Length: 141
Image (cartoon, rainbow, N blue to C red; front, side, top):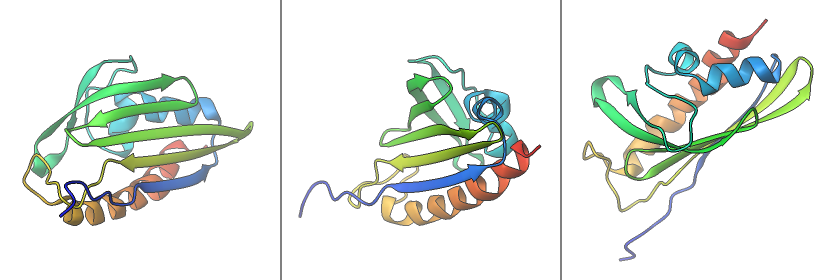
């Protein structure tokens, strides 16, 4: 059996009715992320190690790996995953946000001993709700 069987990345794109600067603030700060996703200790600094408080699954260690304000933020999440968030100003009042959660492998398990094949489905539906419902509610004018 192949030691690595890549699963499809989770990709969510949405147009938010908010200026780029407001969306960037909501997604690139600890306070902003806590308001729509989960408690954390993020600082937007390359190499900064931070914690996502993932509730029943405990704390996950993350590291900021990409930072190009106000258009790109990326971080490694745990031992296998990478989250990249890209921002595109459409006009003064609209911003396109794309989130890509990669690193899925059918032959791996998470730090919590859950198979990627199982966890991916839960996380995909979570991102769907978080990115398309909670984040727009937070940033709308």
